[in-house]
Image (tube, rainbow over all chains, first blue to last red; front, side, top):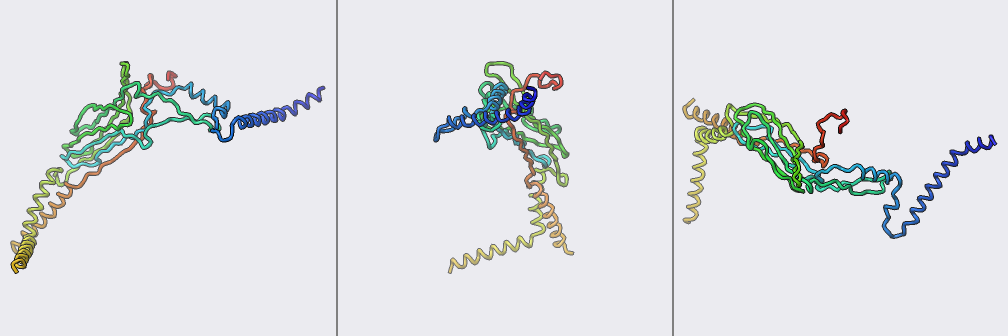
Length: 254
Length: 59
């Protein structure tokens, strides 16, 4: 008896493995047998226990409410400015190329089932407002303080500041973008920082002149310099034009 | 050097300097553009206790 028992214990792993293989083959055959030819594959029949576990796990971990959009935050600012000139800083929260998202999850290890995940839409429950602010010390800019604009589905929001530096130097600042969520049912509002970006603007002059002064002095100087230095060129041009006019009149008279 | 030559030299100098100043005043300024993709997970409601450190186990 002891020898027979030992033999059985030796073969036990092999038998167990064979049983598992048979069970697997039987499951596969059953699944194939239920699928009629020409009909679309029934995905529910292909869900394995692991897939079920995965879907249950996804269902249990309820996703947090979010804005179901891929967006692109674009910040544009002048890296270098002329003294006294006005430039703009533009911040926009645009729609990304992908646009509206349909979040999906792969259930199961075989990658069999793809199903959309229902992320609660924040637009349905909240007023979403984008709030932007520019902090730039030493430079005059408008508008100052928070600027807000409602965030609507599929629509970009843009904030523009006008900046006019009065002294040369390097100015560093921050462009803030917040999202404010006001529940439609009148609950307390919440606010979160979406982005805080550092910017650097270098303000320069040329021979002590700012942008406007340079344009005025440059224009006047070009005229004065042309009259003083190119007088013979101007007189030659004048003679050339008047000669052509005379020839033109002469041919018409003939 | 005659008076006319001196006048012309001064005129050409004024013209060159003025042209340089005018060009600098009209040259378009260099702007920088920074683009950042924003995913839906970044546009969520702020979680309560989000300011508490993770090791407290509140989150």
